[in-house]
Image (cartoon, rainbow, N blue to C red; front, side):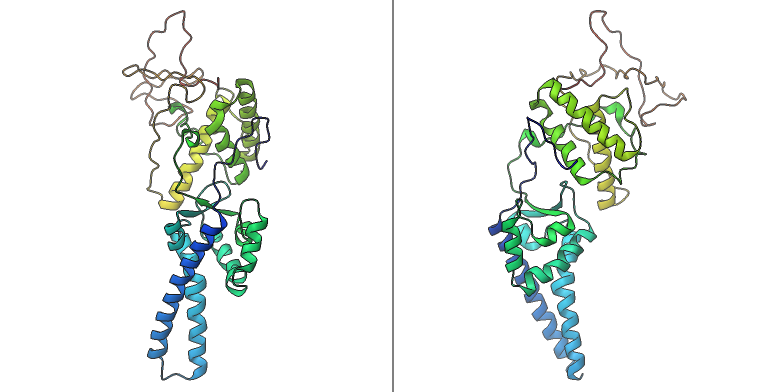
Length: 321
């Protein structure tokens, strides 16, 4: 599935950049690349004045390909989608699902950009951006990318609540390579807007998304985990992998702030000083003890405090309300 189609449709979280700002960013990038090309080419010509005309022509072509084609590709790859022009205009290139681009995305955008921007003076890119509903040029379409605005006000609707602590590391072994970008975007949309949905509609949407995600990973969704918590935990696992891939294996993702009392639809956070209560079906592992636990091995379980008879035991998670 590529998007959510419901009566309470979730608006696209990413804000595509407008054509004028994109054109200005491209002009700035071209100006910087052209200046670098002229300076380097002049230096190379002076240094190789003793060579024949054919050798100087070959060097000029090599400098053109290296600086005007390879330069933007390298800059977008190393900066994760923010060239000098885009940085000045507050823009960024991201994947369709909002994640950072990689070398293959920048390579496709750069190679097609030579045809639709350099060879046609930007005419093809402008026409493609005007025709596209999200303002994408041909390079973005083939690379699966989108240019978005970064300088936008932060709102509560863009906050993805973190999963419950007892799910930390539980889905570290899942194979997420077959999950399409559209499904990731739909999961993010649901998690950021689930508080605005009707409880029954939100629960059915979570079950549908969890079923689709489980079908793509090849592992069934656990029955003891609510659908929304399962989606949040798998999404966080994917973000951790993306961070390790982008910043190195030793990088760790900063832990998000603890969810508000209504982060997952009315779940009440445990007060300070109260030991953690594991959910039903999760065995208690005492400090220094042994035993198999479906959660991360570095999480130490503490005995559950006495629960009044007139109150149900807390699980740390509640379905959308």
